[in-house]
Each structure stands twice: as structure tokens, then as C-alpha cells.
Image (cartoon, rainbow, N blue to C red):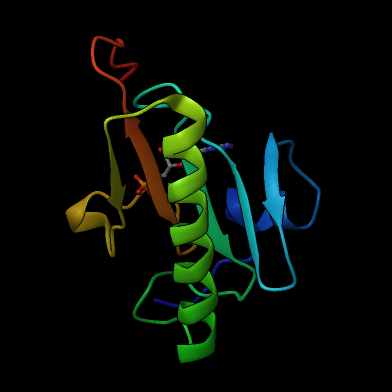
Length: 116
Ligand code: 5GP
């Protein structure tokens, strides 16, 4: 699969589509998921144009995982979560719907409703 520069996350990166951005650095961007599985569901993406983790460079993976780790800590603290699920899918056959590499951060707050 080759990278599709018209995918929605590429448009968010270019500022062509709206998103609630919560963190950005030279290599990564994080924003709120538009259809959250739970309140506080964050997505982390590398800026590198890679459709999935397998296509991402070593440096891109290091940056994306470092941001995911930092934001997992921040989201857990901000939401008062008892646990946090971090998920990442590679390929439509395993549920990837947006073909730009991304990491889900989904906090679990006891008693809070699931959104999806
Ligand atoms: P996947 O199923 O590919 O692992 O996850 C894609 C995620 O992107 C889904 O959780 C979905 O809700 C989210 N998403 C899809 N389109 C948009 C969008 O336009 N904006 C935002 N913020 N999230 C999106």
C-alpha cells in the first residue's frame, strides 16, 4: 500500500481539516478522537507520511512512541483514570480505518460510560 496524502489525518496535519489539537512537536501531533471510545480518547500521529507502523522509519517510531508514552501519563492523570489502553492497528483487516499511522490512548475511568 502506498501512502495516500488525502487521508483525513494528513489533512489535519496540513491544517486543512479541523481537530482539537492537544500536543505538537517537530515530529508528532496529538488530537482528540472525533468518535471517542471513552472521554479523553487521544490519537497520536507521527508527522512522517507513513500509512502504518510497518512503514514508519525507526526515528519516526521512536518519536511517536515517546509522545504516546508522555501523553498516556498526562491523560491518565488528567482523567483520574485507573488504567489506560494504548492501541495501534496495521491494516484494514485488523480494523485500521485511517491510513496514516496512529496510536490510540483510551483512559479507563471506573463507572464512566463507553462512548462507542
Ligand atoms: P483506526 O480504526 O484507524 O485505528 O482509528 C481511526 C480513529 O480515527 C477512529 O477512532 C476515529 O474515530 C478517528 N477519526 C476518524 N476521522 C477523524 C477525524 O476527522 N478527526 C478526528 N479527530 N478523529 C477521526
